Structures are given as structure tokens and as C-alpha cells.
Image (tube, rainbow over all chains, first blue to last red; front, side, top):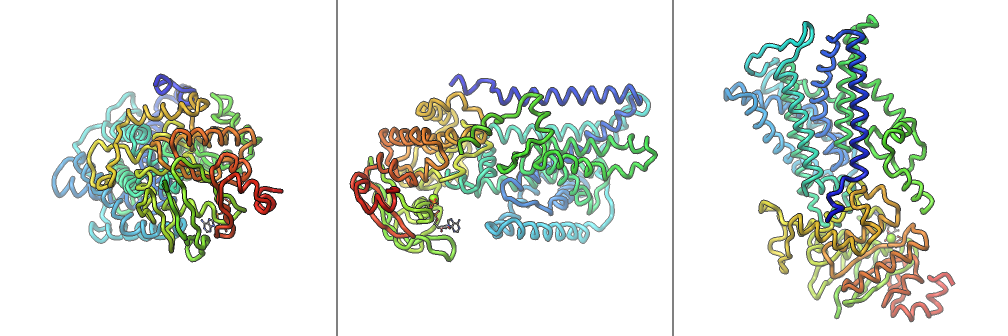
Length: 361
Length: 257
Ligand SMILES: Nc1ncnc2c1ncn2[C@@H]1O[C@H](COP(=O)(O)OP(=O)(O)OP(=O)(O)O)[C@@H](O)[C@H]1O
Ligand SMILES: [Mg+2]
């Protein structure tokens, strides 16, 4: 039993890496703050806020990709739907937004299961294209359904008015919009980690994502796992949608407008990996918001910031086509530049075994 | 005693029939090997027995009961285990987690859920909780000492031989009556092949009957009690392993001279 509880080389390696990256980031921020003044950290805060939302959404999107093998293009509109369900509870039933978010979480989980039962289960075994096309259709129906029911009007959640707290002039934070969003993002990350690492359902989900056939042959209830994946995916969409509405307004396109950003986060992180979704979300969110001072400094409009995450995405894909945390496909022989950096900081797991396997097989 | 019997199985993929009436049986305590050229339908036979493919005709019985077309999940609960030919571990799960998955069908849910399909099963299998599953994993790993230090490594980072061991260990988690194993020696160096085969003999010695598909016909027959030779989806030869090894036709055609 002893070795089960041991702190393993793998977790030590990962912790070391996380520490190194965090330290580099903090040093980078400190350098920025001393060079350009402390108010530049406002953009970092905005970056973390956006990242939190993108991460929640990206985890949800990547979970379904992992289990069902297709990109759910309805995901943006499911986020919007989540925001509107919360809005309904918030406005019409005059309950706090927290209740709205909880109701929305549950409703969207059921919507997800319903989507699987009614549509996507019927397309199983037909390759990735039919479900993608179906998901585009679902997205159109949801988005225009919302327009039909709730009009194209913009809404604002009813939340208690709290003024922004200034730290220094030009740098401040808002309890709900900034800290609330980041806290929710963190809570979701931790929940997903617990689900995937410590529960049988989560392990079964990872197993099914790894290899559906083997999961079935092992006796995993892959139907139950699939429903659970849809429930997780869509309830995460609802929360991401509520957060989007919270930092801006609620309109029929809020989710759709960030869908590409969420896709970018998933791709940068490595498709199908929830941990990759976290990394990708951070990279995408921070790069978009922190590019603003840079753009302004160059005399360009800050409106160009929406392009930056995609430039970053392309750069990452050139260095590492399978994303930051994605597993290289077996045919990938080239050791990429970034791989060498990872080797240098903490070592790449399995490098030795790769060589052994190649010579053996 | 006949443990498992397949009679006149017709099966395939979609419209394409691969097995045209294959029969085989496994007696208790036996190792039976199925050999034959590439594409003969050996894997298809095992998948059909294990409920991954549904036969269009024919019957599979286990301990005298009809299990034709029964889903794998139920067969695992009944006491069968299957190790596929390739991709037989979950690469992103640790070795320990792979083993845990091997016992997932017996994992008692903390909340009784309507979808817990174990209810109504004739044998009412013994359910386990997480710590019992852990303990069972440690017991199982005792059979594979070289995996002990790697319990927390991802299976995908192990060597081919180690992964084959993980797959075997995973399938032994519930101490099955029957182990169906598809080409355990595929892609392994000769030294490792012997190692895997000796593990299979060991598993058989502990009371599990084994159906083993193999390319490595000579070595397989050397450890088996009986053998079947398939060709283009039909039974070609069958008999005691010793006889097949000595049969000149068989030797010329399937044992490489
Ligand atoms: N998933 C599949 N879909 C369609 N045809 C398949 C599939 N799997 C196998 N086949 C076909 O079925 C036939 C028998 O395949 P099978 O895998 O049973 O052969 P095998 O005897 O196990 O061969 P090998 O020794 O190469 O593993 C082959 O002609 C193969 O092309
Ligand atoms: Mg085969």
C-alpha cells in the first residue's frame, strides 16, 4: 500500500514545471510594472478575468471532444442559453444571480443529456462530420430561438451595485466582475481536477476518451459516461455564459462571439485535454488583454487585440502542432524546439521509453 | 467440463461476413490457442465471443448458458475478460488507474442508481468499494513485479512489453474464469514474448482458462493444451497442441516448415 501514496516523480515534475512557469510570469509582470507603471496590471487583471471564462468554456468543449470525438459548434450558443436561463430566474423570479446560475447549471446539464439522446447518439459511428454539421444546426436553432423568445434586446443581470475598489489611481478591481469571475473559474478548475483524478466516474471518462472500444470491452458503462460528459460540458457552458453576461451584457450572440476564442484555447492547449484547456485558456485570455498596452504603445487601436490570441495560436501550433498539453501522435518524430525547453525544465516524461519502444517495435 | 463453447458462428463487419460458421470450445483449466494466417478471422472470432460483434448465426454458451450477443459489461461480470490485440491499455491513465478500471464493473456505487445494471444478474456479483479495489490491484500487481515501481506512471509512457503486462494485470483484476487474449506477443522482442507466455501459463495455473490468439504458432502451441487453426473464416484443423505440432501438413503450412 505504501507506494500508492508516494509522491511520484511525475507529479513532482509537473509541480516543478508549474512553479517555474509561474515564477517566470511573476517576474515578467514585475518587470512590466516597474517599466510602465503599476497601472499596467489592470490589463493583467482583465486577462485573468477573460481567461477564467474561456477556461470554463474550453474545459466543457474539450470534454465532449474527448468522449464523442467532434467539435461542438453549438457550444457558443449553449453558453448564451445558459446566460438567458439565469437571466430568466434573475429577472422574472426576482432571485439573486447565484440562484440563476445554479438553476441554469442544472437546466443546461439536462439540455446536454437531451441533445445526446435526441440527436448525437443517433449519429454515433458515422465519423466526425455528421455530428459537427448537426451541432452547427443546433447552434442556429438555439441562437434564433433565443432571438424569437427574448428579442434581440440587450439585458443586464440584476446584481447588487458594488463600486470598484481602487488600489492605486488607475488600478482597481471589482468584487463581482473581477474577483468573482476568477474565483468561479478557479473553483471549476479544481472541481474538474477532483472529478477526473479522484472519482471513478472521472477516471472512466478519461478512459473512454482514451479508447472507446477498450472502455466498452473493460465493462465501463460508456453510455453513462457519455451522458455525464454532456452534463459536465453543457453545465460548464451555462456558467461560462453567466460570467460573460456578468462582465458585459446579455445578448443573443454573447456566446457565439467568444466561440472562436474558446476553440483557440482548446487547440492551443491540446485538443481533448482538460488540463490543456486550462493552459490554453490562460494563454489566450492573457494574450488578448495584455496585448492592449503593447498595441497602444505602437500607436495601433486596441480593437486589434482580438487578433492577438489567434496569432499566438498559430505560433504555438508551429512549435507544437498537438498543442501545449496534447500528446504527440505516434508518427511525430521531430523533436520540436519547445520540447527541448520542456526537457530542460523538469524533463519530458517518457523520453527514454520512447526510444526503447522504437527500438523494440 | 466445457466452459465456453462457440457453435457455427457467422459474424463480420456490417454487410461483410468474415466468419462462415466457426466452432470452438474451451474446457475448464485449459489453454486453447487459435492460430491462422493474417486476416483469417481470429480477432473477429474473439470479438464475437466477447459480445463486441453480434453474430448473424450461431451460438456462444458459457457454463451451459447462452451468452450470444450479451454485452461485454455483463460478460465481465459473469467472469470473462478480454485483452485486445492492440491499444489494450488506457494511455493517459496511470498503471494503477488502468487496474482500477479492470474492476469497475464490480465497483459499488456510493448511491444506488437506477442505471447500476448489476441488479438482476443471476450470480449477483460481489461488489467492491474503492479500498477493496485498491487492495485487489496491489494483489494483482504481485504477479507482475516489474510494474510495482510504475504504479503511478502513465501507461502510455511504458514500453511495449510493460504495457502488455498492464493489459494482462487489468484483465486479471476480477480473477476471471476465462481470459480471452488476442496476440499477446504482437510487436514484442523474443525475450519479452517468452516472458508474456510464462505469465499466461502462470495465470492459467491460478485457475483461469485461457483462449489465446497467436501468430507465433510454435510458441503458442508449446504452452497450449489444444489448438484451432482458422483459415478464411473457417475451421481448418483442430486437435491437441502436441498433435498439431507434429502434423506435417500443419507444420508446412502454419509453422514455417
Ligand atoms: N473493423 C473492421 N471493419 C471491417 N473489416 C474488418 C474490421 N476488422 C477486421 N476486418 C476484416 O476482417 C478480416 C479478418 O480480420 P481479423 O482481424 O479477424 O483477422 P486476424 O485473423 O485477427 O488477423 P491478424 O493476424 O492480422 O490479426 C480481415 O479481412 C479484415 O480486413
Ligand atoms: Mg487479429
